[in-house]
Image (cartoon, rainbow, N blue to C red; front, side):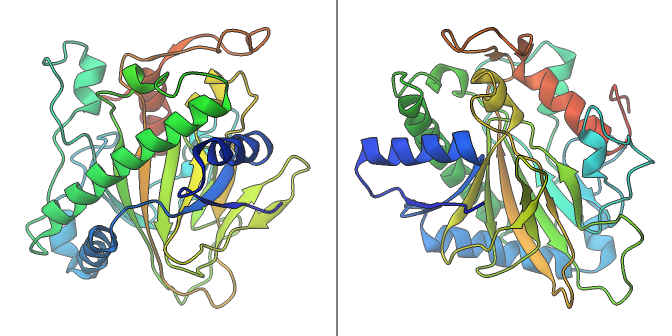
Length: 320
């Protein structure tokens, strides 16, 4: 399975066709020519590395206050992404992931204060560390840039589906996306049986835009015959994959592909920035007209997101 590299500077119809083909056949592609300034990426990257190098007490000061809180620091071997699968082993049965993370959520306030308690949950306050200096502005600038990039990609995707380029726009104009900083430390001890850096899972929202080190390895995708295939990140690019919401929207014409992060021999430290783009909390995810007999019941984007996240930390439903 070859993951294509798509240059967004190409002719718009051609770019849409390339993205549509990748979404249908693989569910993954890489992009270059994306227009996100290097200065924005480098500042966020540097701040992330420094944060994970801070003393434990700095990170623990912004730890999620209870299991199931959506933002903040989650320590090493606390989360299990494989548990998010509906038919997976469940939390406690899946080995914990060999990583630690920091996440924050929507940075723009909604037009009106939410009244749905579940939406209040997804808009919980983000927890910002006191150190390093400049961490918050660097990460918020990155979040803003990636939000705009996701909107551009969804416009191309709409064209690929034969829709108006702005088809998805009303459903992402107050999106509840999250940015997750991930650090996979270099460890002397081998993993336990079946343990991975990040367990096999699909992503939950519309799409994920991942930035990791050029040439780094460990990310693998699963193809239709069950074979795992490695993805090597291209210099200056982003890895993009579809989430469950777009797969459901397209009635499974497009793929939300299973993926994982393995620990290859002599694995070095791996750092990644994952922008998880989600639709508006109240966006109704239902199979597009003309896509055939629906394979999925309609679902609100926010509640789908909440239930999947809570499985990864063993809390469903979420209660403090």
